[in-house]
Image 1 (cartoon, helix red, strand yellow):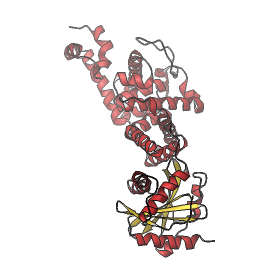
Image 2: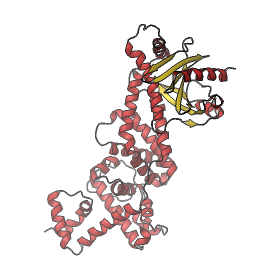
Image 3: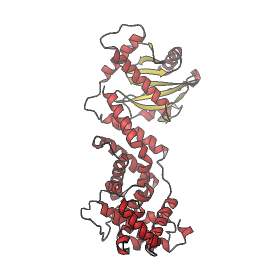
Image 4: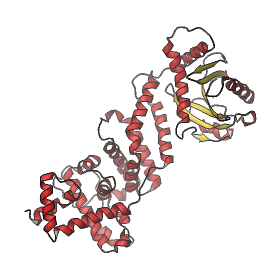
Length: 184
Length: 253
């Protein structure tokens, strides 16, 4: 009967997706920088994932979900905080080319240097423009490999590498000016 | 031996564990000896460690999990993911009524044995699910003026949520389940240590007042006006007869 199929479908979805809800929330929290917004975005993303669950193929559920969460975050940011998703200036990657993502904020390095309230490393990460912030979060906190990060963010691996490089350089330069105990 | 200008572009990948084996050895050898690249790699590792230590650990709040589960149930109801249409209320109710007839010694009619068990099982499953984890109620309140309005707009029927604490059946709250692909309100009562779910569905036939036992659980059905009530519990069958009596008395007029 249909209700049995419906229940089976939903419980399969829940068993695939809900184990990664913490990871989804963490990514949304880093991208929206706000608890309530992160919760709204995650709920919307999970419902979206449920609607497109037919397109999910057995494999890496975490990357699949994070990709949807990230997309939902950007849509939300574009609508509510467009200043957060201004294009990254002068992005050079090994195999850059097709750039479908919103890219952020002019000069990341100058931005970090110019703010005096960034005494802690997590605050520095939070101040990075979104495309740099997300690669740091996905790599250091979600512990994804380059290929998975490329899948989640929808850019080539070369772009992932150049963004990581750039994000770390910016963080280090900003961080070097502080006392380590202060920064961490 | 690799040169520094060959090492530098590979340093991040090396620190991130993304370097394949033959190259990995070469980079490691270089780092061990080079006074500039070695500290550079160490600095990158310190940065990674620093970020991990400094970053707050964000976890999805419990309230968000609950919200998502409720939203999924509603979503699944709104758009059945399977192509087959959900069975109509009449077909569904007929299956249940057959099950009840069977339980009260009536004759097994047209349908096979599978169907009425499926119907009874559906209610028992919903009952069991409500006891697992933290999802007994969507709205926890013994106040009927809180519980009844909560259902408004969430389901097709509006259940009379009466508190029967005075009669030994305190109202715990309300919950929205999906039964036969439709949102179905459940009123949750307690009888001593037992939980009783009263599912409220549109009625389709006359009053049966019958009790059915399946898998160690008791089901009892009654109709009132255009609503059908299906109580499920692991308490004794006589408790449900009593619940029906006091529930009817409280909702009359």
